Image (cartoon, rainbow, N blue to C red):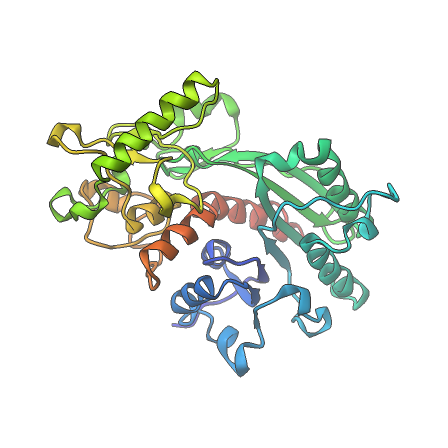
Length: 371
């Protein structure tokens, strides 16, 4: 049965499609995507060719490789613009704090596409943007000021908030800044009520006071593949383990907080996974002292589950985890089609899908339905 779409969206700086999964889950049709990394493009096509075949037809015209070369007028009209854009400094010599200050940055490409659509008489209703938490303080706050001023100049009202993935059912302490903007001439509301987490029943938590008690319970073992299928190659070598410990001790003596982080299956959550995880896995090591072994890295499957992707792999160590809100069969299966190194890199760069899904749901309810 073909899907009935409620709205259209474009997926910029698409990575492996965390936004695609999320927007699709609430009735969104992806009409254009852009991603430059060739391996991320492979993952994107392998996972979304079935639900969005038009993106990959006609010599990939709707699956752009370089957003800086995209002609805004050739991008189909859309309701929602999604983008996890890189954090870059703006030229603020003119101190206009607006559209012109963004030239030469990747954010400019987002703003320019939106501007062209407004001038063509098809203004995007909502902009759904993601960035690192540090964007708030980047260049002493000037970068965020220019972004917000640019969106205001284009006719959008904005709200932003830092959200943590650990409150959305994945065992990862991952904070990211989200900017939601809506076109004032089409949507007349004053504020966007951010979801702060989800509870055990799948309902949205808006009240900060409830997070400590009511959010969906997690533990790191929720993402584990069965221990009896674990390849010894994920256990780090004696040399690497000694190196990790020595480096942590040196950093401690020098007053630096950097070093490995070790967790076990009962840990409520782990550190933020990064794109460099493939190098040595130091930010998330799994304790195996009960087996008399050095710690191990996460497998690529576990790294993907940590970001909320439903990846079958060798199954789940805890069968109950396979049926929770983020991993049950209502979620599309994500296929890993690249090398282990690239898979780690892609998952480290990805958004946490359950956070994006809940934001997408709220965007539909609070903004798109008001139009």
